[in-house]
Length: 458
Image 1: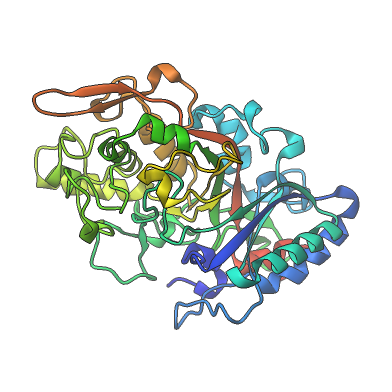
Image 2: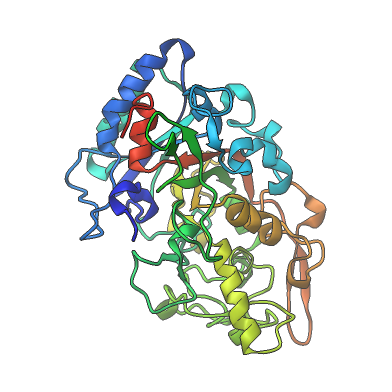
């Protein structure tokens, strides 16, 4: 049974469009570490779990809500790890310990060009994501920022995140439709979308029937160790800048843009309505590719949603049994997305023919703060990036990347649209640019107290 009270609520529910978020990426100050920790202790009361009975977070109970996570270098600063006062009995996974920069080749990244996170002086030690009601956000943000600065933290980057009122992203498409559900928390008859809790939270069985790698550190209790990973989750953060004007210029027809994404702007999937948008299907996520569109004649094989979640698609399938097996394997690589928009909102009129976004600020930065949660960075996020998003021969394609890939390779920016009697292949531009990121660990509530209180018994 899930220990909901001990799991940060962010794992189970996003803060809706009535909440804005302030994502502060911070560094500890070695000379002010005691002051840093004293202030973090005062913030633990704002990191909420979920009620075991109602499975709900009482959003009126606190003036603001916090999500708190640490990079591995941040945990080392606090004395956890091989050289620290709390050495590992069993370390964290290799991907988390190495960090996003060291995994650049797997992800197709170029950290030297990042604005933050790519060098030691801009690598965050922790993230504090503060959420407050839209009406109170500006005052809460100002007070919160002043508080952590007075506590001696160095801010390496801060991003204000929000959700569009229509839940669209900056290219004008409905977002967040396809999300996995967690067995033991969500009630669903959609077994293809319902995943074991160990896919997202440490300490529980995953879709392979095993427990994901956790971390044990030495402790002065009876067992001599403390399970630091229990009820925690790994959070991937990537700041992705979006060029909305370039995207529209390169895809002037609605159908061109829809083919790249795999859905119409409403969210309706091309697999179910390939010729015209159908608002009645805008939230429909109950479809499979093998059954409805095996060869990509409706939704191209290389479209973004087909790469990021192939569902049951596999050209070597011969029968129903193989299809079910592929769906089961696919569930081992799902991620929970918790991203937010940043920068000025793109008005609806822009995608209806308006000439420019804002004549006074034509090139103001905007994008998505991509955030995902998983229990295994290697088997989930990195697998998706390496084998699906950035794989040039994905499902039989040749020298193609995901249309929204951040990989800087113009020669591989092609897109194939299967058709009868003719298949089209066209050149694309780069629409999304990586500006910074890091791997974080979101500890369970007990582990948070253990870390911040100086490893006292909890």
